[in-house]
Image (cartoon, rainbow, N blue to C red):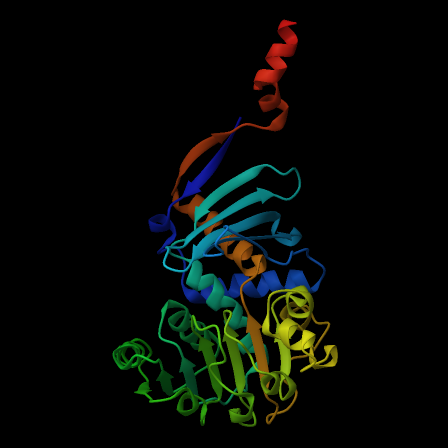
Length: 335
């Protein structure tokens, strides 16, 4: 038997700030760029394709951990997020974390890292398409690595975009404007955040102005112009070239080529590729979430929880002991 730490959403909710997640994520992507293994997310769906189970894993050798991340979601159902950490030397399970409270932070942290490497230093305006928890986390992550003084936000529901503008104005002490279209959110933006639940295209590549950096988060469709006009950086190469992504769809349709793909974020953080090289360059980070930032964030929370004495423990049985408990073994021994 071994004791495994279980951490509830409430216990980890106040353990870290967004800056801590960005720091952990940066180190995770550095390890990824230096060869750390991370798989492309695998998706399974029920018979009606209305509820999905998505899982992926990563090993971070410098951190001494590996882990898996799994969540269920679907149309009209709630989402459930679970992360499991293991020791990467002997495979011993270390912790199970409820992801309900910190999921937006770890997703936002990847965009924070991307912004640090890809956005201009002298930004002023952040454009936001979306008004949910992911959009809020994106703004918070940008605030960790860049100073800005204006936010312009569009969401199809007027009340939502106005509430979002009021909230971020107070939180970040900036001017915030609710605008009437996604194009208005793009115009004049030094950084554009696209974080919605939409399945279609929410902005057009032709709208992007010279020098803009884009954080495209989620599964909304990115059009061919957005890829062709930008330095296109993704969170996981396999997803971009052979997975569930706008790039893959456009590649299969002949709208883009593999030459339009530039690199993974980890390649830049690890030093094998460069980020922004010119002020008028347009850069785009496409992020649907990987286990890299998830396991890096989970490990950070796990260590903080140990220091704070948080969590409860459960006993897990190794295979060497568990197999001997199996009924077929006992039956064989009786014979």
